Image (cartoon, rainbow, N blue to C red):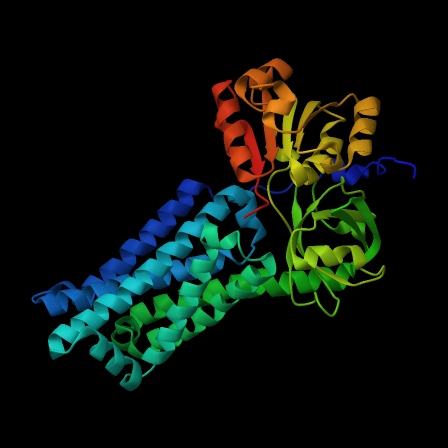
Length: 460
């Protein structure tokens, strides 16, 4: 089969720029901190400090504070789950992934503390045992059973996100468990509405919390449902081809109507669900592996889970529901004349698209790490880019000892030898997280400023 590069992108794609939102990380921290202080001040206004005279009251008061802050973090978690493109463009997937993890665990711990402190306070006041009081609250108080179910669902979502657990379950299972976060929030809202001090006693606080819920669910509905529905009605994406790149790597080509108007960039990814009997309800992230050309998009996936293994059997013509694009690892972040790309395994996927885009305007070096030659994806295309457009491609194949004896092939000595001017380049990374962390540390030691290191997580 003849290997050729996809045709060049149309001129409009070469000059289009995303508007940069004004929200910076420090702005976000300020807004979140101000809301946390406001929540605490409203608790004080409701007499929270006046009810701390006894141990029982102090425990109950802590239960109220942790409930308020935990609910706030839970709503923030839903905003992070809204897939708002401006969040991706402002902070990048790497920061959002870290924020999603820590906000989620923070919400879980605070809501768990609320249950413990509240039950303890009531038990001390009533002279009951902790377990006996817990049973009384669950079986006799309005909506406490509902809140208990909500906390249990949050705990299931949190435990499934622990790295050790995440490695042992498929993406499909993990994604399905995470859908219960929406139900947990809804059940928790009913509990807060009926028994929460802010809702019962203070119309100003009630308006504040209702506004928070309205904004959160407005973002969710707008970005998770309304925007994808509008885009898919407009473009009507379908599978136009399925190609096996290696034994376990498959590329899917999507086409549709008015593809030239679909604003996607090399280096970004899409959330896609293929409308088959087994896959219509499951959405997966797929990186774009070729520069968008206004006619079709190529998505490439490694067969890691049940759904990705079914990709090879997708019939041509299958409808696809597309969300996105997401991610900010694009050429807009480049600040140097030269670019170093470091790919690990299937992490070459977004870099392959960027390589094609950068090759016309930058001096590009790609270091491609793989276990064996059979694991190299797009080798023929990479070599064609190297011969036609002057891109430098180096394959680092095998174990560390196989490549450079006792020297780490992506360590400081190796990178400095292969790319002597690395300090003058932007560095784009994609691959397993330990590899990216190690390379980021290495290039920082070689003089690359943190702002010129760009990475894409794909295995969280």
